[in-house]
Length: 180
Image 1 (cartoon, rainbow, N blue to C red):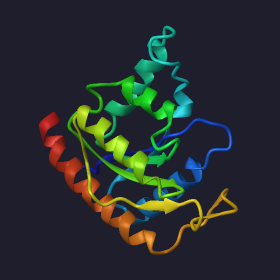
Image 2: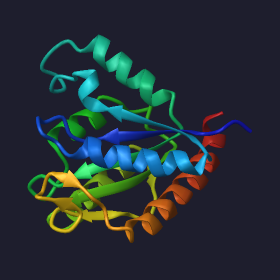
Image 3: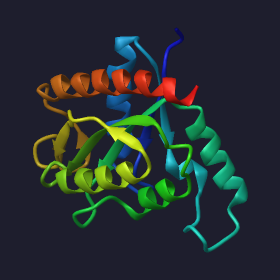
Image 4: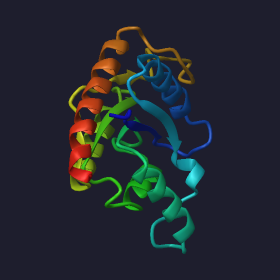
């Protein structure tokens, strides 16, 4: 069987965001495993306008094509006012079937590890028929980011990251049989 394709979704588009640092860390650890094809998918690259405010046929098609090429996801989620970013919610809403019957893990960060944003995301993923996995690396802005800007994760997060990736791959492989 060929390797699964897992997208590491960067959940923010704002200037000065930290999600690229966290995403690169996840990708580095994931690539060292050698058990799937991992790629960073930056929602900022798709330049999705607010849903319904402009003709975004070209952007939406590109976004859905990218999602259709993936078997599962790892969301890099930062907490904004106790929830996910508006950009991530907008990107989630631009697709429907492309999300269905796939698995996702969540790596969150914030003042309380991004836990509230992760819980909001879980509810949205359920509506999109995405099976989110239980293991969840939660990173603290106070202890895993130097001066709140340079990502320096504690080694203890490796156990959760690898456990989450194990679950994402198991579920992604099982759910792939539903899409064939």
